[in-house]
Amino acid sequence: MRQKTPPPPGRNFEKFVKFLKPALIIVLVLAAVFVVAQQVPVPSINLGIDGKGDKEQMSASLKILALLTVLSLAPAILILTTAFTRIVIVLSFVRTALGTQNIPPNQVLIGLSLFLSFFVMGPTYQKINDQAIQPYMAAENPISFDEAVDRAQKPLRDFMLKNTYEKDLKMFLDMRHQNVNTREEVPIMTLIPAFVISELKTSFVIGFYIFLPFVVIDLIVASLLMGMGMMMMPPVVVSLPAKILVFVLADGWSILVRALLSGYGT
View (cartoon, rainbow, N blue to C red):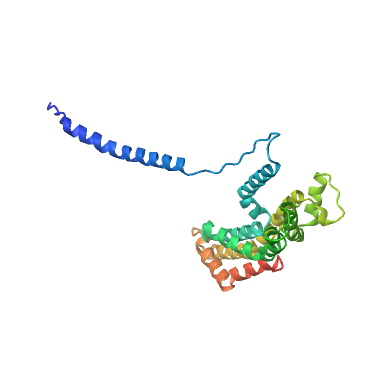
């Protein structure tokens, strides 16, 4: 057999240099980032508790920590205390009833649900801005942070109480053994889950009514195919274009959005 001749030493050295160049570039970039990071002053929050500490500084630090916590929970607050839950579930029911699988895509449904939620919550957020945020940020005679939080809760509580079933609210009150004389005395931590359950219940009722006409179309198409002896042909092939045609001719998107918005009194 013919033996392979080993590559010359110079070729191995060239390969080693080609491998070494990217590694050196990465090391230099990391070193430069480290040097720049050392030169940029990073603000620190000291949460140490001792007898010599300043109470005002401690209070400000705790408020900053609480604000960061609220910002991390902002997506959950947006979903659970607004009209987003009902809107996104109803739109998902429409897509499932049509049988179009991923059309419209999830990004479109979520984006439309967000903007419709902002449209519904516009008056509530305007009240929060006028009654809590602007007085808190006023240059003269600003209100305290605690008072601003109390004022901001009232418009949001009014919105959730307006769209919460009495039965769901009573269920959570009984589970916590809480007695309230008026709906305005309901704690916010009890009101939020009751509101979410009510929104889920309402969205599923709307979804049932959305499914009815499309189920009728599926039954008609399946009966026609059976009567014509086309048992091997999937009914979805015919029913899907028929459902899309009926939905478009009935101006389904406009009717659906109008019904969702009118359910919140907008």
